[in-house]
Length: 455
Image (cartoon, rainbow, N blue to C red; front, side, top):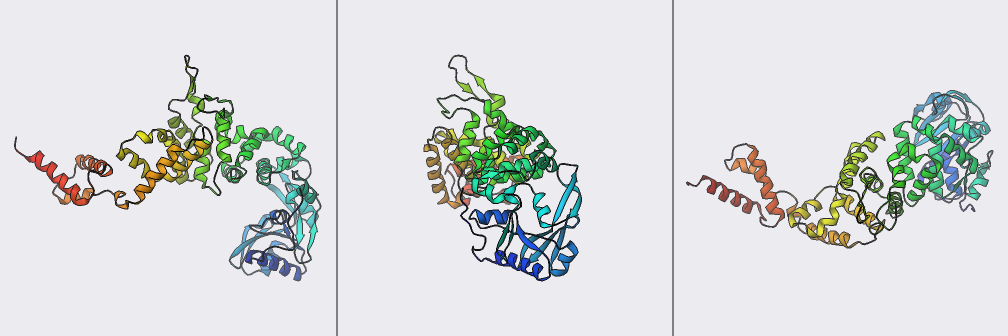
């Protein structure tokens, strides 16, 4: 593929200007300094970098002496954060790593020169160095060639690179998906052979890669690459099992649950919240253990798969160390997604309870994606949007008309009966039988009067 970007042009934003100034200051102090890695890659691909990493032959103490605000995040590995203009820049000393023992980080670090630093990196497209002062690209790993041809290739022997840091296997898949590149055959074979080692990586690091992988517009491609690389069964076995889970063609012309999931991922809106993406991926994982085939009709059924799926989703998300709030949002969406087929026949109060759920916007978008990933009919989605619009015109219906304090003020004593009474009032409010606090209090008074009336 042709490179469309320029390393000397680009928007002169404050981050870019500051990154240039850091390199210039290092060079004025007689050190070598370059922009490295993703910022160089992205510029060559015509993308504006989100951040700029800098590599230099200056040692950590020399870096700290040159800049007034620094953070020693990885000092023993030669990594210092420089804070300038309110932004953080990673400035790292050229190094050559060795003696990896935990599949994550080196136990010994030897500082070296720029070429040695390039040769220790993961992929050729991330091994490019650029001097923004001189306007000169340094490429010791043929990374520019692989950028032009759209190839993900390890620097050096693939098995060695993946043995050093097992997460690199997942990063290879992520880069291939994000950039719509191919993975070089030897690199891909090494991933397949060593895929099980990804289980040695912390759940937090795996989760962060998966969050980046399952972003539009490359989410479905990312899922397919996970499957083909052999990583899917290790990082998301619940989804890998859906590959063999058939569905009735009358209801799901797309075929298996896996096909349904990838079609949904292909329909994700731009920049979705993670809770939506993961609700979409996990909403049908409960179909695998609940599948049964009707002997007479041949139809495949999945009774209770939403409840089973919600439990499975919670375990999966906890395993990957998702934040509690996101786990609650996602599992709620999974639990309720089958409810939407019944909304045209619901009582007004029941429908409004659905509309008033805090997660309803997520659930509604999941329903839209669910439809687009199967039959494509959006009549219920449009109905719910109309109902939601009508409800939005009546903000007074969202809070309850009265509270327990109001009942106590009327002279009622604290008891379990107060809760059930408030529930009945809320039901009548959502049914439009009671519309104001005064009507609700009058209803309570009439009820109390009847209860106290002599026989």
